[in-house]
Every structure is written in C-alpha cells, then in structure tokens.
Length: 218
Length: 240
Image (tube, rainbow over all chains, first blue to last red; front, side, top):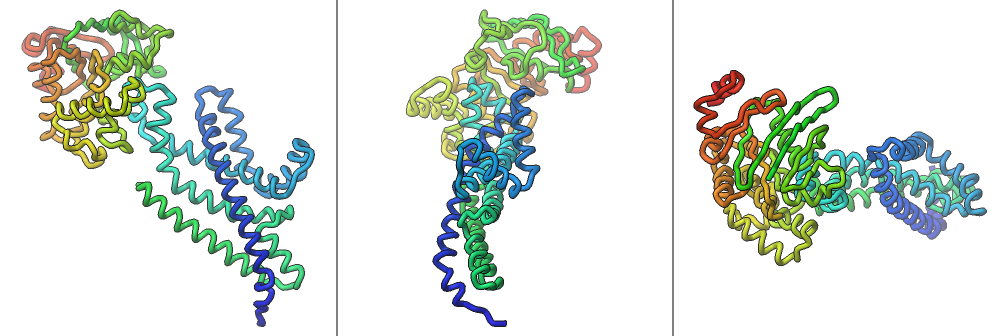
C-alpha cells in the first residue's frame, strides 16, 4: 500500500486550523455547559414539583435524543426561527453547550447529593442561611468530587464536536473529509484526523490528572 | 429559657415525639437519656429547628421559634449544636472551621474572628492544630474543635447530640472534660448522652424519654437511685 504523505503535508495547515476550531468549540461548550448545568442542577433538586418538572424534561430530552439530531434541529429549525439566520459554528456551539449542560447538571447534582447531610445540618445549626451553606460548605466539596466526571464529559464533548462536520462547521473532521473527497483517498486524511483527536484527548487526560492531584480529589 | 409545649413530631406515619412538655432554666444542665428510638435526638433537633416541628411550640428566650415568621437563622446562631458525627467541614482547616460562621453570619472581621478562634482553641487545648485539616485529627480532637466552632457564635444555649457516642473509649474523657468546664462557666446545656457518669456529675436534671414521651424527670441522684416508673427502672437496670 502506498501512503501519500504529501496529502497530509498539503492539508496540515487546514488540519491545524480545524483543530483550533475543535478546541474552541469544546472549550466554549464545556464552559457554557458548566454554568448552565449548575443552575439546571439546582432547578432539578427543587422540592417544588412545578419547578423541578421543566428541568427534569430538559435533561431527559438532551440526554435521551442523539446529539446529531439535536444539531440538525438547532441548525435548520430552532436557531433560524429564533435568530432569523445562523452559522454552522454558532449552531455547533449552541448545541454542544446545551447538550453538555444536561450531562453537567447530573454530574453536579450527584456531587451535591453525595455530600453528607450532616454538613448542611452543621452549617445551618451555626446560623448560616441557605445561600451561605451552598456557597461555603456544599459547593466547594461537591465541585471537588465533580472534577473526575467533568473531565470525562469534556473528553466526550471534544470528540462529539466532530459532528459539526455534518453541517459544514470547518472543524477538524470537516477538513479530513475535504481532503478525502479532493484526492479520493481515505487512509491518509482520516488516520491523521484520528491521530490529532487522540493527541487532544490524551493531553486533556494528563491535564485533568494533574488537576485532580492539585485539588487532592479522593 | 427554653419552654417546650405539646411538641409533636411525625415522620410520615411514624410518631416520634408524641407530647413533649419541658421547661429548661438559664444555666441549667439538662441531660436527656432513654433507649434508642425513644425520640431524644429528635427532641434535641427540634430545639434549633434542624428538624421541623409537626405541632406544638418551642419558646427560647421569650421568642416562639416555631412561629413561621421567626428568622430561623438568627435563632440558630444563638443556639450552638454539637453532633455525634462531628460534622466538621473537611475542606477547611481547623481555624477556618471556627471562623467561617463568625465571618459569614456574625460579620466579624477576619483578624478578630481568628483571634477569637485561637482563644477558643486554647480553651479546648488544641491551639497547635489551628492550621491542619480535620482529616488528621483524632475523634476526640474533632469533637473538641466542633465544640469550639459552636462556641464561636457565642451561643446562649448549647445542644449536644450524643457527643461521645462515636468516639473510642479513651477519647471520651477529653470531650466530657471540655463539657464539664462549659457547665461550670454557666452555659445552659441540653445533652443527649449515654454517659451516666456525666449525667450524675454535671447534670442539674435528668430527663428520661421513652416512646416519644418524657416518662420521668428529676435530679440525677434521685432519678438514678429512686426511679418512679417501671420503664425508667428497666432502662436504668440495663445501663447502670
């Protein structure tokens, strides 16, 4: 089998450009996902059924339907209806953010609920109000416990951003497909794309391991 | 100081407290004893509303705390509580455990809170542990920190919920010593415990609870040596 390295060399600038967009999509997705996810977790833990209900179904929908379906729905239907127009990058960012917010919400909820009840009882017994108990006692402990599963979510999100190629967002896989169709070759571009994803996820794994040690996660 | 009238507490179908009437005076040390499941911990937890009250009233210092309009956080700051499982904050150092409520609830300046916290740590004999995390303390040390943390709020009343039950036997003494000191200083205390020695030595009054009722209450010597009710006799014959 002949392996045409010149295809990879020629497309390298585009792969790198795609990689940067892949990183951007994932980072924005996970950041917005974390912020939204936190509030959704709080909503889903509400003792009031009427408040809990929409959050429960938000999570059910986003976790229970394929990400690709959500991407098509947002890109072709929801966002054009709301904004009048959308770009592929906008659609990917919105979809990834909302999708990850559902998973992150469940991670935070599990983290908060894993904290011993005695912690909030002790904090309340000292006169702290609900907000203070959350801010100073529960959240710091829950966040620490959430770091490992959040790391997993980040890695999943990074790989899932490749679905953006389906609506022509010029991320990493998009350029792989472009190279494949220009030269009618599959090995070189897809192996290279796979390799770059692997480098990204492995770097992330090492970064997360370092963070876990820093925060002394038990 | 504390007046409890017709206090009832149910969990679903389970009636834990059936009709509790208790009066506790200022500077009094009241020890609550009884078999497990008798409702004594639940009774204690109703005194600072960590447990919500189903029916009846609890009045502390002239204020009816079971009134829905009552600012519950303000009340709790006046009533310290020490738990069986210590419940120190594991992500905070010993010093931060004590200063956190002083700074957030009492709005003390950090330096003032730290100075006060060091005083309290000296009082419980742990000033050299100020900068360590609770993880590295023994059970007895944790409980002494928990007591110091509650005292940091300068409470009028201290509630102790089986403070020595989770401790290894050799550490019980150091915690009881701190509690005795506190009683001597005139703190109003309600103590749920199995330590009959402590009840006898420090208690002004012992309340015996069983099956959601206060069965009998009296001065310690009188209650231990001359119990009036069959249930009290049966319980005491097992623990004394």
